[in-house]
Image (tube, rainbow, N blue to C red; front, top):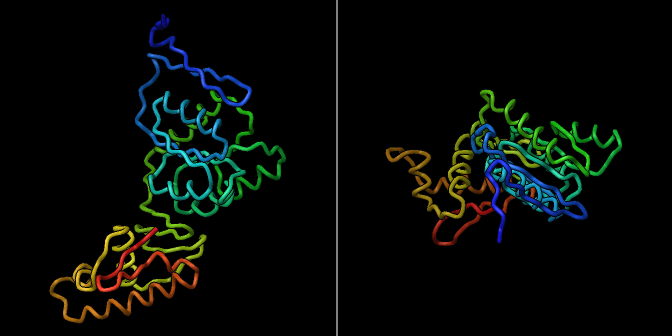
Length: 256
């Protein structure tokens, strides 16, 4: 027969490696808004532990098992990011450097590296905090809560999306590859914005012309082909031209 506990005594055990970590929830805990945490770690046990712990404590958890998935999940606008330093397909430091200028939320590194030079590298990459493995799960939880509390004092999220190495900031009207800005004319950016915000949807020349120039504009929709050529040329120079795809006989679409 399963023993029942009052809600404030209920105990959750999560096994990771050689350690069994017990997590508690308390009925009298302060009710907090549903904040989102992105956790990126290539160790399944650690990822599972952190997901269980933070979900038990009222957070929405987004997981990533490598650097590429971490960058892709930035579009979900997390309120806090936990990055393992050593990951495949982009380590934590490179991920941080790529997204730091476009993500306003705190970034905390998790690592087994103990040298001061490693900590300095983490802060130089744009990290806000650093915890060594193995770590106290309660201390990590306290640090996350403190960072989120501090960050959400009137701080607004930026409207940014990531496509591989490409970063589009729709608020600032900028496009960057690995942190380096690419210059686009106003109409070029508007076309890029229309397509990338409707990823996978095909737009013909006439529809793009109406969306960007307006229904009453005088001109020829054939101008779209020239603008698309320029956009693709600028992206292709950085090996990112594959995002803008021609659908023969139909129009254009944006692909991830």
